[in-house]
Length: 79
Image (cartoon, rainbow, N blue to C red; front, side):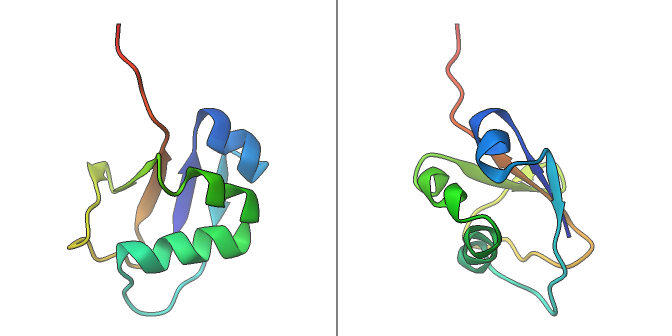
């Protein structure tokens, strides 16, 4: 699984992307647990950021697999 980071999340992760191997399929909460386990500083983004899976915003029904591209999307303000 390829995980992409942007803005402050990129700084917290210490990288623009991360490769993570998972077995089977995982739900949204499980992916967050994996992210925080791999990069504990990302815990600060759990409540304010969204995950996207293959270019689509993820929700509790999203199933993530090892071949997916996941992006951590930080809060965005418009103007």
